[in-house]
Length: 208
Image (cartoon, rainbow, N blue to C red; front, top):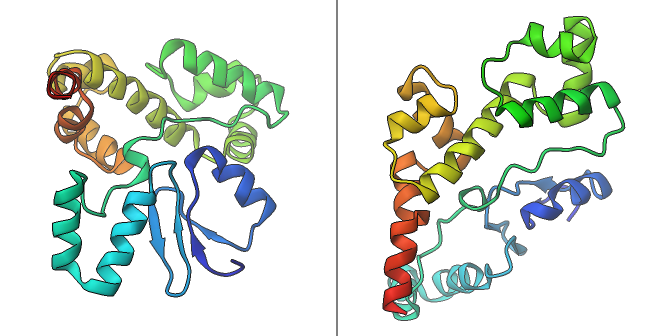
């Protein structure tokens, strides 16, 4: 796989990237077709992989008919629809770990670069460098992931409006929240709720 595009389950992303850095890894994708090699990244991704092969051999019409017969979505799903934010915590930088726990406890609300650096007892430039080295993300990106993670929980478990959820997780502008949510998860908040919300789960349970 050296120099080839591939995917894996999101839980193994960091370990695979560290062990085989030459792989062009994209763990947001559920299936990656790189010509003579196709990789799939989920325990149930065999359905997506199988449909990809049907599409290649028999064409898109047969593939869509097969998907409908199997009662599954056609290929196009992404792992980021499902994968929770799993921050790096085993990096060994105690000052950054302290800030991570602090951010988690307060939901990354009402924080600035200055307050994060102060909590780490570091100068801002040093904090920025060490935070990114430790977590793989800028502090602003990290906070966005934490907030979106909380929003995902609320979309799944409550009927609160999307605007209210945006305010609850720390966004003054619901429009900005929607853009960040879609960029991180691959779905608009409303689409995410329709796919994973409690009401959908109840309907599926009644029908099964």
